[in-house]
Image 1 (cartoon, rainbow, N blue to C red):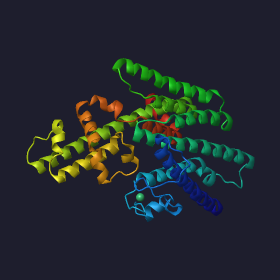
Image 2 (cartoon, rainbow, N blue to C red):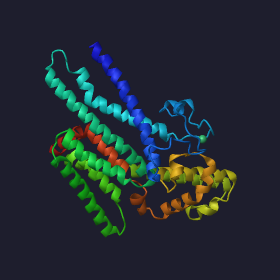
Image 3 (cartoon, rainbow, N blue to C red):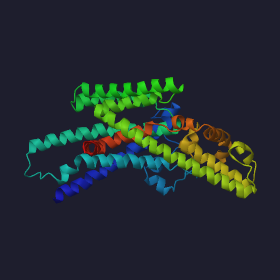
Length: 372
Ligand SMILES: [Zn+2]
């Protein structure tokens, strides 16, 4: 039907634009919340030169492309993470729209369909769209702040927990038990794991932020969602760990070979990494890039390096010392890597979003295979 076709594309367009605008705000949340700054004032400014960003240079994605990723005032590079977060928000929001409404547009024959029933169906879908949309838009800053700073702000976790209860009780009418059981199951389960881990290993494995996060996911998705999220999140986390370990390994080998060719001997191994830095200029910049990339990928303390300006070389020099310490730590204590270098929040968030889209489908596949 032509009408529903056009209506579908028309609404799709606005859903995508709305996702981009929210994503633009999420950038502000990700950048300012860990620094304790206000989310609303002042207006955004360039992290390098401090120039206020004009409204026409602040259009999601479009401005980044027009300015070719550089600040208009100082032409320093703007991190690609900003448009990436805008795009991610828009894509997830659009996919959620498709997931919930595609059938309403293309599979219902509205003219012959029972209209009151169709209205109920649409209302229900709209409520789910709002609730899950909100859920995703809180999980995005949680994931990125956890990734960059290794913390999850309480304000975000508590928003998640309270909204999960309110939405399930008052919007979706699932009653009090649905969010409550999910909240307790997730929170208690992670709390016990954390206590157990600390008893056995004598150090913190799961942070308090992770415990509150899974409790919040539980209050949104219920106990079935929590079980899925813990399970899938662990699998994704393990994959992430393997990939980053391989990545670091490859980087490490590349560095060793470049040192060899630069210095013509083999004395620069991991233990006297410091002396390697006093080599030629070429080697120096190699190391600077490497530490910079490392700092970005496994998240050292320096947040400016991560969120603001990833590839600026004049910054890299001053940050080398902290990057090096991190590197030596990695080489000597590999067992420390799993617990302290990989944040769990992003993987839990990914699993929770996966549950919204494919949860029941994946659970059915799983059940099918155990019953065989
Ligand atoms: Zn600037």
